[in-house]
Image (tube, rainbow, N blue to C red; front, side, top):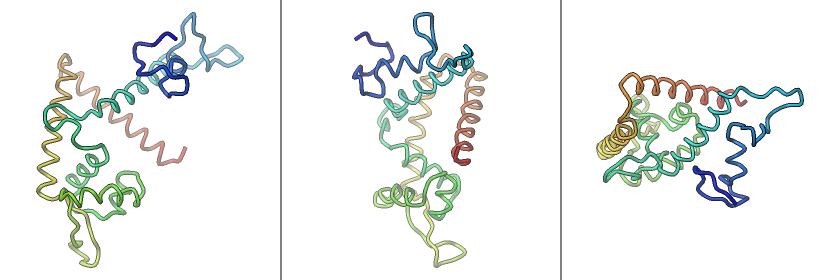
Length: 191
């Protein structure tokens, strides 16, 4: 079975099999468009190219985990990184508010934050206005660890975009931010 240069495996039941990779690729003369309807119209090529690039990005990001470079490379999973970032940005936060802000269930936050509390990166404290309520707060150790991982990830972004000028980095960041917001809005609408 021939392999595509971006394939990691060629197993027929694997998500990254040749058939699924080819199905996500833009059509060519020898590969008809599977989305073409009976009237002969097809989705715009730029949308095919976009969905293909997003699929490649998701796979490659997961493969590398965009974990950074140096000692901190791949040393913090995505869930922990996003939770610590949110606590750093928002300050002490209750589980429900943290879940709502991240667009995930409270039970997911509780499960994901437990190892962060156990490892001393996050601490549970009393709510400043209501001592009966508990909030989660980034510990000094958590703040230091988060900065170490951020520095590693910044270095990776610098390596990956070393041939880009400042305008290209800014435009990419703005478009990626807009794309992520559209995904978030789509999920919130339940569509």
